[in-house]
Length: 463
Image 1 (cartoon, rainbow, N blue to C red):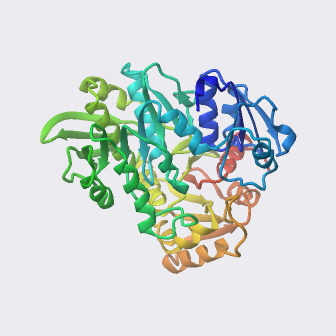
Image 2 (cartoon, rainbow, N blue to C red):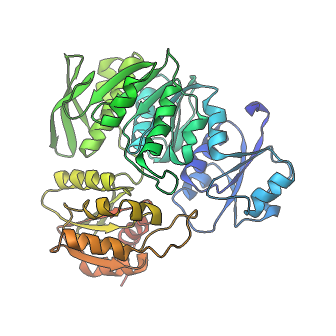
Image 3 (cartoon, rainbow, N blue to C red):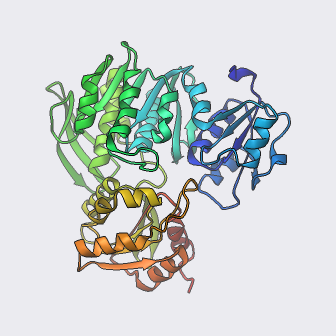
């Protein structure tokens, strides 16, 4: 398919983070963007409005312009969607989001950032640094990046850095020249029945790297080490825990809102570095970025300067403001490993605060499959409110509820102050009644739990 000949593109489910990311990138290439989605307001609405996308609310066959050259659809929808059905029936060019992204990616010197956790931050950070040092990459991130004023950058070089999602084996469409593999931690049980099937997706992806390609690998992760050992491409490894790797961090300290650490490369001291992002997981993300930057020839002084200037992405340990003296932080954490990492980062940065967590479980299948891990992931929380599960549009109601998670948490931490809220409105009321100076409210989940933070910070006097 010749992308140059495509002028108007229609997106079915345009408000999804990946779809919005791709729409913004294609808009920057001069394509006319039209699409549809539900009427609910999403965080991506601001990006779509910024590119002037024509977004139609609701799904109807008549929404699709007859002169659309390409129809891209989110796999959250199937052929029962009236727009998808109409496009197929009319013989229009129809592709999934992953196919459309691959159409762009595979024509470039593609850098794919993959793994279970940290993809969004690492992709944005890498794109930010490479752009600042003059390599002019194009970048596509699955979240709003304040320093990009959107989710993408359109560069002048052949480098294209993308956040590559493993869900539904989207990785099968991509042909990378460079891959960054952060970690492998079982997830998406609605698609992958077990750890082996989940790991195989990454193994197959890494196997596609050419012999003259590059794999940047987190050697703190056992599964990543195993896959890297079978790679035909060059491997550059990193360790944030002082393990055996090419790039190793040591003497990590937190002070006044920054992390400070020393680095060595193959035993050679590289000196001192600092970053503005919280948490040891973000130290690992930084090492991935530094490893790749060194490999493509970026000057060490430039790396030291710009690695510390990145301020993060939306919904990743994002400080939203305060309510009656209580600090409010929002995070996308929706997996037990992510919850632990986020809580550890917050506890280190705010040791004197009482940490109150509002957690929004994401999908029935994930909550059920990882129930025991979820139950043990809130050790550092002082108080916890659990919302009812935020179901995926791909799931039907299977009668599994947050009550099962709450029961497991109570058995693990009988003294924890633990409450249940059936919806965001109830949670907001509970927090308005209880938050006070000295508290820190941590919002966690992949759904729309951030809306509680928006309400508290924007309307602090609402009764």
